Image (cartoon, rainbow, N blue to C red; front, side):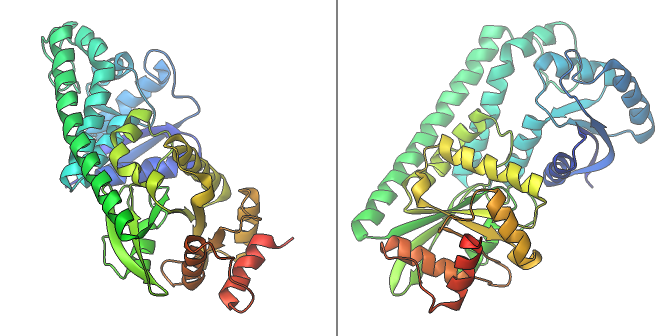
Length: 375
């Protein structure tokens, strides 16, 4: 049985949709959604009048947790928890809970642990100060730890976790060097979470890797070999991106994400069926994250996935608004139906072999050119 929750989020449809998906991925059943224009009031994040309304909802709905779709300062979390007598989860902690549920490999578990410790470190001093003021719910029993003891405990655990991740990173580097010596070309799939990366990975490789509409199905990198025109290529699936993902979380997954820096091609999978405002937000989040970790823009292919769900004219319009209409490395695909997958493979092959894009002899390539260059 899933824990129940009241969700507090912004009054925007795309934001509400993502917040609901996050709650679902974390295993919470939403009993009530409270939409607000602002979530940055100094004392509670909310206005005091809305906090009083919350008390009434809590009395009737009796939720296990209040989920706040924004980053809360420790003092705001404390004020809400003390006033409402209910556990409070802000956006960062909610994402960390999802990571903990999804982590399966030893490396991804270490990455989640490091992200959680960094979350704690940034709040350590304030949490100890608040803990001394009295017992409060949702603060994980900090009790009477002194600031330096608590701070040093977190720091030591972080250093221990980092050292283990460094070993994983070195192992990855050895694997990359081995692949380079053998002559393997490499491809990595990237993109916003739930854009269909894993489905595309399965379509390209013939794998049966777990697919799910939930967020963050993939946390650890999976690599498989495919053959294009007798050329062996390694393709990897990576963790999905999400808006407002804190820098420390991105850094915690650095050993996974660094594969995107060293790979020969990065295929950015975009959900073309999203309404454009949502699509634009996700696209910008992906591009900015790739830029932040140092991915060369010249090696990116944009795969507009789920094109079977969208009229061709709409895809052309969306590509134009995203600035991709003239991009020769952009094409619509459907990982489910196989639409344009041969064209995607041909594009991959032509880039890896430094050959020009396929010409008019390939009918699927003609559709690609039409969408990329139609006036």
